[in-house]
Image (cartoon, rainbow, N blue to C red; front, side, top):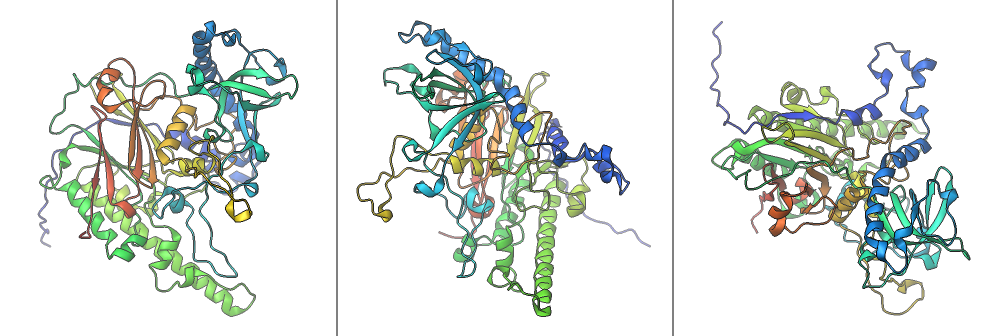
Length: 577
């Protein structure tokens, strides 16, 4: 037999950056230790059941979270006490109380605990949110076409905190809890930046508060609140030494590829998601079209396959959202089986499209890390395990280039010859940010009045917080998923909390956001002006926060230059305006 000759096109020379994955610490909390055993009865033995994730209690994770973040909170509060030592109110004399039960009334104290936010959403109006069809919230919690028997599912939205309607904030630890409330602080006080805002915190956030417990009411009026923040270790960039070059190593971050079906906007505009993915592929692989030689890595932040509702709309065999009538008849049973078979077939087709897209990117020499998302075939509870290799066979054949990571994702990129010149990248598919947005609002001073309940008068709208603000808040908290396990589904853990930021990331991102946003923050978590970033970078670490838009809706990908942390967005559009 004659050997077949194939014309192989050599891929362009690419910027190579050593990469060390560190997401394994999340996988340890998501996978049972006995899962690697081949014996079928291993999980049923008493010894194995002790290691099963659900053999633990959820209460332990709050204690582990408080223990991990307590020292950071106290350290940040102590800096405020040093500044306030000359205050007329004698705030600087406050002492750290080890347990809440030991706090004394009428004495300035520093308490550290977990915030508990008690709200009744039935007694107040919804915050006027700006959630759209391409938002993380709508993507992760999609609405369906409702009917009289099955009403439409509304997107989860945040509610405005109002103490006058019975809302209460508590601070608790293992010894007990105390009610906390903001203390009125004048505008001429520097500490007002640290004032307690109930609409900027959620249940599960660890914080240190400085204040006094009222003798009459037993409520602690908080002078200032201080979060943990990430540790003070990160790459210090110097733009003078890291000069820009034509092939500066660039990290590409994308989310929401939505393989398997066109997005709702494509249906209305006549666009094609498959065509936009092809445009992206040519941009990555053709040096003449884009600067493909500079791409050192590609991170896909969830949303690889389309949501179930989009898959059903794209499949003619499933009509009316795939709804069936419940009953005991044989016809109903057969109809349900056919619907499930059609759904499985459509999901398999979506995975094949995703696998082919990844394999084409990998064949060009670009390493790819895939973070599973809400609709991917993996476990629902956080941390989500890597997608199984059998679902992406072509991509997994590139052993050295393709990475199946957990959700959240963490890895280290070496951007210099120095061993300390490591860029830590941390991020997720955006579910943690979407869930946190349900409990945050822009301002607590604005009021909303319900006109539809007989209350007349002017109403001041209060916008729900943006994805960037929520991402920034998690950075200040020092915790990626503070709403878990109260609202965000997570695995229980007794040893430690895997979502605590153990190191300060250089790039911190969230996928499937409603639009592209970026922000540069300093060592204190404060926003840095891009124009003055050069002066800040030489003195202290900086972190690039990135909200990655969903590609299926926006056609946008995010590029981050690793030497300078400069960030830009590239848009692909297949519809003429």
